[in-house]
Length: 337
Image 1 (cartoon, rainbow, N blue to C red):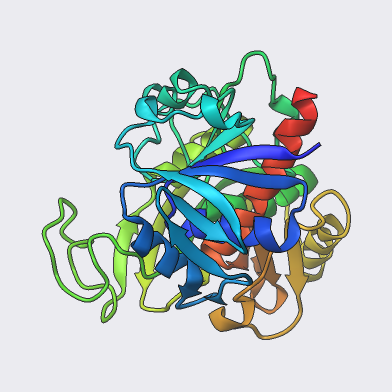
Image 2 (image 1 turned 180 degrees about the vertical axis):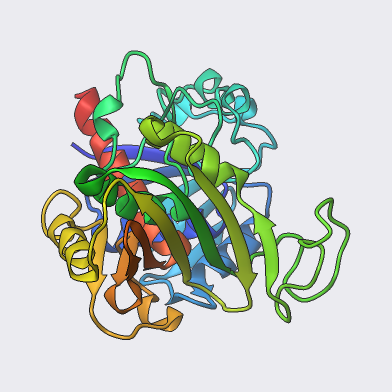
């Protein structure tokens, strides 16, 4: 049976998700979208993407709709979730991808509009549950969990490595540094007004240090056994897409480089297949553009000094993350019967 979804927020993640559903998910149908932008803007940005290229279908606009290969997808322009009429479209769940309604009380507005379930496409501090495919999806309870956070792309990359090494050796403590591709907050080209004075600087011409409280809290929710043991920060770097997660961990016992890489490779071919990859090539960020996995371990960068280990994973930010949204949608639908 087809899974009927709605999307609130046709931004980077919303458009990537639309591409994936159209090109390779015949079991999922986007039946309605909501965005405060006009139809002409949405159609143009969906049609041609500066990183992903042309959409693999014809995109047109019509009154109150985006038309994809002749199929009309209703478009509304409500400013808040509680004003969107999802019931008339008979959605099975809604993807909340505006980046604005990440707290549970705000996201719960979609339920008032007739959505049975909401997936927040980023880390949320108070969603009913935070799930990561391959890590803790078994914690999902359909009766109790109506607001689900799919965590975030950086947490996915770090957690796949962290979970594997913790289960194999035990993690005592650690630090995550993410080299994160340039974002739009407050703007990549010009200095602008922003509470964090580092983030107020132009990201296209500077490496900008940034805190990652959302990632740290998301890791605590996903892996509570390590809560409070992992610090996190980021360096926003001037590249168009693709990022890296650099983990330095103190383990419960000494290990070797070969042992660590073999452990990660075993996980990539078993429990975390599709989510975690291992590469023995000397990678740079552009090499992982288009990667569907959440983490590509660069084995050439693994370092060990006794019980101190450093591992680096690459990831194509929203692209790999959008694949996990597709996986989560299918998982939630299967559990809902």
